[in-house]
Image (cartoon, rainbow, N blue to C red; front, side):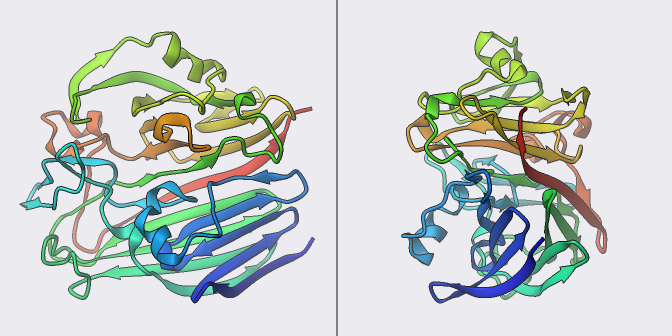
Length: 336
C-alpha cells in the first residue's frame, strides 16, 4: 500500500497531500486546516464539496461550505453576545438574522507543523496560535492554541482537534464541524439516490432568529427519516434541523455519528464523532447546490447565553492552561 505525505501547492499556497491505499486527502492550512478534498479513488467516492476553479480568496469568502471546516465558535451567538463566567464579550453581528455566526478560526492561515508517514498512516499536523497578532484579538482577548492532526490510513481519515487555553481568562469551548458532504458523492450517481442516517433525540425548536426557544418539538415524519436512514438530504430545503445526538447502530454495533448512502451503488460515507459532540445541526443551503451538512456540535446554538444548565446546552470552559481534545473518523464502506 502506497503511503505518502507531501507538501505541495494549491495555487500559491502550501497544502498537504495525504495518500494511503485507496484514499487521498488534501489538507489546506491556508483555509483553517480544512480537508478541502478527500477521495476513495477505487470506489469513485468524492467525500466533500470542492471546486478547484475557485481562487484562494473565493474559498476564504465561503470557507464554511466547502470541504471539512472546523468552526470555533459554532453556529450563532444571539446579537453577538458571548457570556463567559468571568466576562461578557460582544462579537460583531455578521448574520442577516442579527447574530454572530461561525467565529473566525476556519478562515485563518495556519502553520504546517509536520507532514510525515507514521507507521501505516500518512499524517499532517497543523496549528494556529491566537494572540494579539490576530485582528479579532481586540474583540476577544483570550489567547489559545488550536492543533490539528490528520491521519489517513486504509481505515480512512482519523482527525483530532486540540484546543489549549494560553490566557489568564476562562476560554469558552464550543466546536463544530460544518461538514459539507457532496450529494451525490458517487461519480455519476443520481442525487435522489442519496440517503442520510443520523441517530437523533429530542428536536430543538428555533426562533425566527435561529436561536433556541427552549421548547422542544415532537419528532414528525420528516425527522424520523433520519432515524430510518431514509432522508434524502438534497433537492429539497433542510433549514437547520437541530437535535440532541444519541447512539445509533450499524452492523449490529453501537454507532455514534452519521452515514450517507448511495442506493444505486450501495456505497456509503460513515462519519463517526466522539461523544463530546452532543448535538446535530443538519442544513443543505436550500438543497439545490449539490451538498448537505450534517454538523456535529459540542454545544447547542447560543449555548453561552441560554438560561439552562450546562448539561443541557453543552456549554463548557477551559481554565488557564487547560486543554481538550476532540476526535472524529471518516471512511467509506461498501454494502454487500
